[in-house]
Length: 312
Image: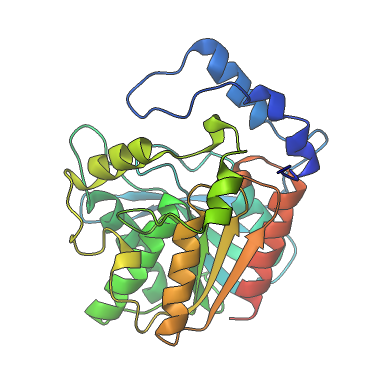
């Protein structure tokens, strides 16, 4: 079986081939970090859109929640989109490409974007510390009309997709505003990752180990997030919870992503309870492709996201 990688990534595969799968507990060697930096480097010639920026501090239960507002220059935005980056609940910030470059691109397509950071599950902190910040930001944004036009949509990537799905569930249960639309990009929303089909497992054997998420890594990340091997924790794993009453939802999965089965299972379960759900597969890319600025596949995914927001 030969995998058909996106052209830019095909040219970069040598950077990750031969590297071991990520290990949550082990620091990376400098030479590995250098190769990974080249893997994630912006595509040659790419320049992120120039938009207006505003640093924002949103009240939260544990103190201010950092956020950044992106507004298009010389255009009247039609919608407001709150975006939450991933990072396994322990990494990431407002400057990482998955946060900043994505926000700029969605903004340039005619939207106000509010990119939200959150406290991480580090130094003994566990769920719901991340979710509390995201939920506080969502409830604040949904109630504040000053400078935030149109419908309010909510989206996130990877662990961020987990957090925004959980925030939507919590808003539904607590009688708060539910987002007009929900965008879940390569989501990880189950306590135990679904295995997927045999065909999918065969594909994964051809993906370089460095780009995969083996069970030991996922168990370590999940145990760190919740503080133990527990599964029945409210809102920790939205894919395992009550999916009724979800807003219209976009799920975008990556073809060569170990976590793709989680997004596909969620799409099936949302459809089963009557949710208006659209499931899209971005071909030729692994998990986290939005972290490579200017990658054509990432820009295509952002077009899909912007179109979905526009239809809210």
